Image (spheres, helix red, strand yellow):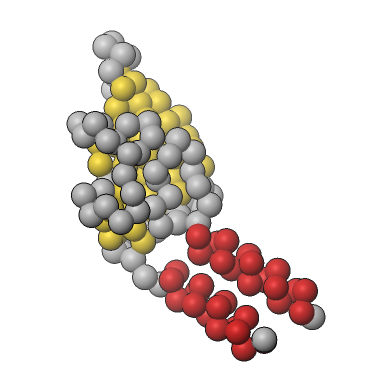
Length: 131
């Protein structure tokens, strides 16, 4: 039983070292709105993001026209410590930028919890119950 827990924990850590995957699209595509109409295995929207440490989603509105802009992409930053959303303003655009650290975490309207983080937390919980 202990070796099974160790193996599962080890596999969880292995996935941390691989390239993160993010949804990549913009609202020029009708499937890339506030809620993404794509699946995790759809190659038109899923992109491997080597040398990145997260994904990003921007929801913004053009102040003059009221036109909404949605963009999802890979993100590399040295300052991202937490998964969070910030107010975004650039020129006539105002909205939110959301940052997240897990595979395909930039799909919905809120930042989602990383699958790797959930695996690690489950492993720690199991280990604590065993000892």
